[in-house]
Amino acid sequence: MKYLVLEDGTVFRGVSFGFDGETSGEVVFNTGMTGYTESLTDPSYKGQILCQTYPLIGNYGVRKEDEESPLIHARGYVVSEHYTEASKTIDAFLKEHRVPGISGIDTRMLAKILRTRGAMLGGIFNAPDVREMYNPNKDDLVSMVTTQKIKEFGAGKTVALIDCGVKMNIIRSLVQRNLRVIVVPATSSASDIMALNPSGLVVSNGPGDPQSTRYVVDTLQNLLEYRLPMFGICLGIQLLGAALGANTYKLKFGHRGQNHPCMDTKTKRCYMTSQNHGFALRGVPENAEATMIDMNDGTIEGFEHKTLPIFAVQFHPEAAPGPQDTSFLFDKFARMLP
Image (cartoon, rainbow, N blue to C red; front, side, top):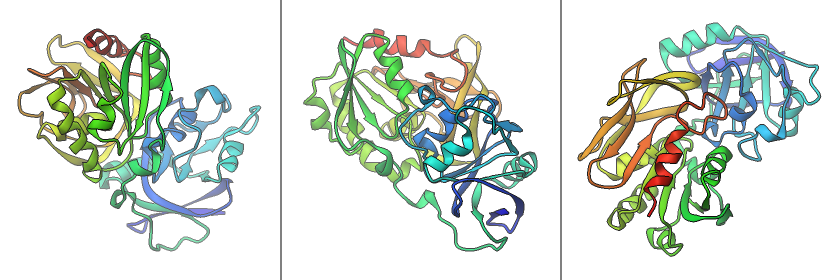
């Protein structure tokens, strides 16, 4: 027997699976019907306990090809039911990475609580008592997931990628455009990056509060003078926005799923997008214009600078998991490179 305990005192009783241990963090939910392997291995979930609202998880097993990083970054996993007959089960996957899970709870009720009261701290415990819980929003999570050394992929025009917790499919999407991708630590300075002689820069997705990674913002501000084409994804839009003077704020319960509708402000066309973020821009930066708007809550999902070759989106155009409706944004970035 295991218990999911929320900081407000709400308790769910369920069954332990995965690693038999206790854990705590920020409890969030993802509405995706597929892509559980990609979500668990997405560094953006660092410090969080992930709840899948889809009622059956693990029904197609776990494949190495679906992993977005070598580790499970979620601190815990919450499902209604997990499939046990696959060649590699989600249970075995969690055990391998020593991540506790809990099944057999009403995930629909949990999601409704989080939507109403907002994302909150919680824990998977052996007893139903509220205790001190880990708060990931107080930590610099990017420093925990960024690469510690420079890595290189592909061939062609050189693109520097600031790794704030990058998903492998972002790198694959760039390499598929015949680009040489040099992944650098988030702590890299502007001079470190320019020493690579890049034709452009990508700022990746990643976990946590963008205010905790001001060192990346400072680097981006120093890079503005070089007028490099820049492309920000997820956390990348928040960091680029902050570098250009915009503010960020924490959403009530975040956007996590694969069916988030976003509208192109010029064409009025709506795209279905994959999203995973808990913070957002509070308006667009000065001298920039909004290019994408979330149709559910009106939040900023994209902007483009009016004079500098900079654009960014809040969603994940690389998908994995999710629709590939907006993969053309990688083509747009490739065309911007000198």
